[in-house]
Length: 346
Image (tube, rainbow, N blue to C red; front, top):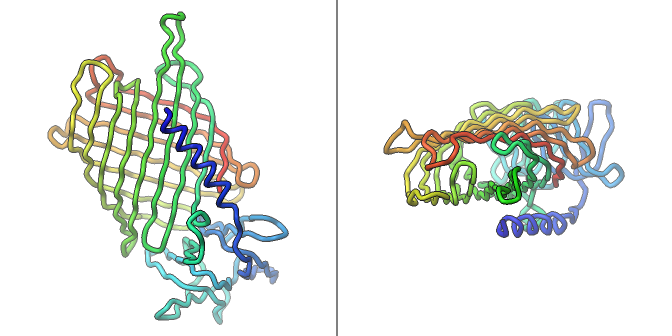
């Protein structure tokens, strides 16, 4: 728990330190003829996040944008997975954007562009961090009581790779007599390094630590590598699949001896986003079969409904499910949580 507390404190410190603003010199032309001067923060799922001096950070429907001019270096990704790195200028035709790279100029229709990310070599490390943190309460099958939940995510993106650090903490006081009361916990700290490849492919390296009292795990350390691809990538939907291998070292709460295993990793992840109201749905499921006995496996599944109610503040409901086909002695096979949280993103 002390490790997670340190992680949360660091996340909060970084979020405050990253508040500095770049010069707002980008120009967006809208379909109604208006122009807005500001700074491009990101384009994802058909919504352009745009920082202005007078209105703060706003979200603009991508279909309402005719052209963009910016001297920022951007990573521009189109629906077939091709990525361009350069500055943007207006093209001759409406709803087209000219990308000026170091070696060429490419005119792209706005309907083909699914993601844009600023990649400014002059930005400091802190200015290129994105993240969120939240807190809420769980209703757990295992305990039937209210449980505190805290989570945080930080990511750092460059032209060629993405580094992410995440953590969650669940703490539950079991009901019963004073002698029978017991604090049960589940913690997770994960680090991943994703390298972007051609044609929507990527490679993913992961490391993690997780104790899970209800499933009998005192600690589980994981190292893994995988190959993945974005199967669907549009302005509203994204579906990816990842397959790879993990090496785990696990210690148990009971008398079972510690084990070191090789296991597979299969992940499916789906995201859907709406602009009005700004909301999204994320579904992630992972299967970890034991390589020496494929009938032994564990699974982790999360379904998240999130909706922004004030700028950068959101409300979400998270359903999480864990399963172990062969649990340690005295442990449960299944655990699930239902969480309602309030969070902040930057």
